[in-house]
Image (cartoon, rainbow over all chains, first blue to last red; front, side, top):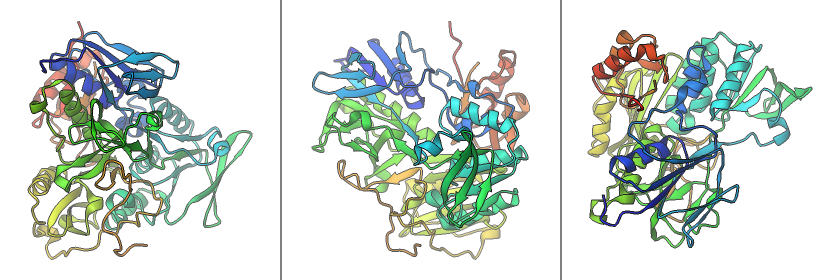
Length: 456
Length: 65
């Protein structure tokens, strides 16, 4: 705790990062006024279950409130109202209803929202829905309960694939349409995408790769069918739009912070950068909306849509907001995420999109049970496991120590490295959940390496 | 009661699914699904499950005064 403690802290964003940040402030002994702003009318809840257990009959979407892991004391919750601007000169957060909240320190944790279906009229049809909030999950679950003759999933990233898995679990026919050849190609590459496609087809999913949806058609205001780029039509009772996420930074447009579609740029300790590339002392960012240079990846700026990144990033930022300068810490944990689909536990550590080679080191990719190391040059930069989660810790250690890939063992013996087949960064596939975005706080260049490899 | 599992930490040991099967279920070979707000009657079992987790991945909300 700093000798010159701030008196007023405002946290903008009432989801996982906002909550964990608030807990850290109180746990460290911050006794000043704490305000948490959220555009949804709910106290913080957990989102990962919304596309998984909450779509079954077991766990209602309302059962996703996040536990509080520390006593928050007095909190001024401003829920159901979005932040509209950050006035750094006055040191005030301006809300959509005109309220001005003065701060000594502010934490930006406004996260992401779904990329909307591009045609507003089609998106407004009953039975067309993305999944991000509790309400989305409730609506989609009710539509699934009504027993649609078929479900259409647009986009085969993690969320879309998880929804398709739930449909098959519930014995509903489902068609998945994906712009890339296979599912999960954006985040994990084409080699692993082939394995993911095998899982989907074995579960009875009608998977259409290299195809896009051209129009969603309705009658009487209800979604009825989709026409696809290959000239076919899919009749369905529900269309789940899963086209990735957009970062909620528009409210900061006039703040003078280095922010944009790739997130709010901040230093490894969460301090936001201004447009002149200088760190700001009283504005911090954490969670999906933050973009920070990562020490393990040569200080490339990364934006990570991962659960654990929201937790750790918020804890680091909150700590740094109220401690003395020499006590500040950096956010250096290895990125990690998980997904559950088609009876398979998919876990990953590191940044797969940086890799130029992939090597299946354990198990069998054909059988959908394996561990694979992603390498760039001679070091492991990421790993993925399908039902091999217990080995992931070992790969995390390899990443942290910049080690080479281990020799394949067991069933994987004799495997050789191959191109992981990431799509051309210029192609608008659903975004990977890790965005590698260059080395400058203000450049905002979206790119993935390697460039010029064997790409479609 | 509210709980959350850090699934990046979870290793699928499944101790929780044996101790509190109404709150934790193993899906497929090693994935964990859980009810983040199980019935209060399950409290003792859930606390046992959280304590027994070999990697301490389960966080349960403190009792609110």
